Image (cartoon, rainbow, N blue to C red; front, top):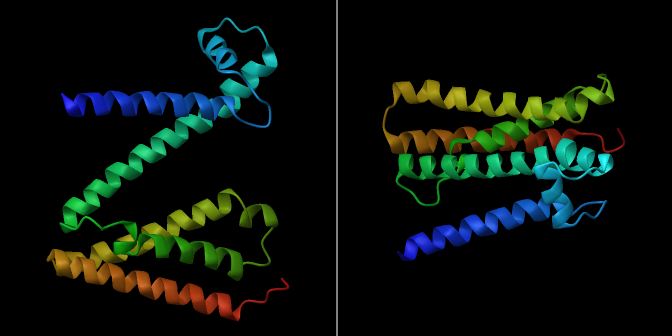
Length: 174
């Protein structure tokens, strides 16, 4: 019964945070305006545009990303039997940093729109997947969990070292 109450409390806090995320912004909206827009009784087209086309997708994305990160964390902790395991254990975060660093520092001739925004996101995804694929390939040959942990940290530290070298060699004026 105690866990049930805690679960209900957390769901209530999630709903309040969700509504606050939608209501708070450069244009202040009341919770009533948000609710009326959700149920379709708000005739203000500007509020509808702000809520339904801008703030609602961002709030839903935040909830989905948070839920996905928590599930991924539980999976990592279960795999490694370690409550401190995270994406940096396999070198994924360092691979993402390396992808962005290579894009930013290695492609000064590309247009600015490609280097910022979605270009950086794409480079981070490619870098993270690249390091993860290397770890998977090596882990096929060495199936022990502790070896996978060490290999992942090795690739992560190597990618981090490359990022540090790229930063030290970069020109701050360009």
